[in-house]
Image (tube, rainbow, N blue to C red; front, side, top):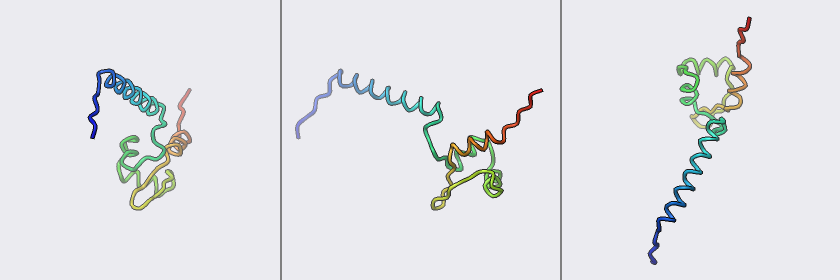
Length: 92
């Protein structure tokens, strides 16, 4: 098996590619495009609600969800629509 020699230029190029990829991922995350579906635990952390509250929102039909196996997923776009629909504007 032939040996591969890695030069400092190779490492510098790798570093630049890695930083570019990380910046791309972070920009997608800040734009809210990183995930289409959110798990229950992530949604509870995001909304700062308890498991019981999340279950109540599912049961009464407030939050649409998809269940695959034993895991419940929520569409991030639909959650945003629910949040926008229930927005209270208290302007005087």
